[in-house]
Length: 350
Image (cartoon, rainbow, N blue to C red; front, side):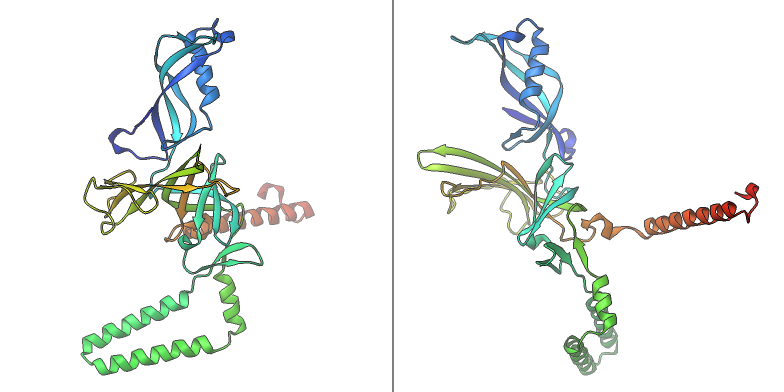
């Protein structure tokens, strides 16, 4: 049994969760105080454990809140206590922005590790910055923004605005046709050395080991069970949907095509104030013939927004100037030391 303790809807990727469990104290620990023995068993059992629909347990939080009487079972020398306690759990909310490290890269997307303790973050290809492509030679994803198209679009918008002011629709159509012809001619012309260099400058590779900032799009929990039919996987997905896809508040639908069940929650966790709500969907699949089983907890992320992606892409101008000034000061100090070492300067000046 568990209960999330989020006071005043304060959302964070780490939450305090109230858990209830039966803790067994083995016979060698019965000589110790009950509180000490129970705490040691909780610390041994729960850290680094994923609880379905709860999250990844980091560590127990504080002493147990309630300890029941010990119960002895026939044939077992240990004491069993019903205990209520709190744990610190890693479970980011939908639409939260996190920072991680790129660990893998392939055609389907990239894999990210958060904090070195959670390695099941996946950013699929359709959530990459546009335009992006997978470089098979390097085995890396590459973002290649085209700033020329943006400038051309701005010029066209400016021309249309001016034309509207003059009220001459024929001239606007002619100018628009000329702009399209220029674009086609520009695309057909072979690239010069300068354009190739500019294209290389606008090439941003997502290298392995780089720090990356992403937004959580969904959190998936998968429970794997073995039944008479074989190995079954039941996945619960929590994601945000728009108002158009979201039904009335509290709407629940059962009996989907693949045994799916959907629950809608208006203004759920991570609702940033925009339209829509949080939808939780359950689906089941047969894994009897599958050699690989999904992780019990997986986060699907996105970098398809400004400010997301490698943190080195979005350094501010002030940070770059500070780095440049720091390098110039170090060079100046080195030059003064060289002059002093050669005997050309006054020691008092350095």
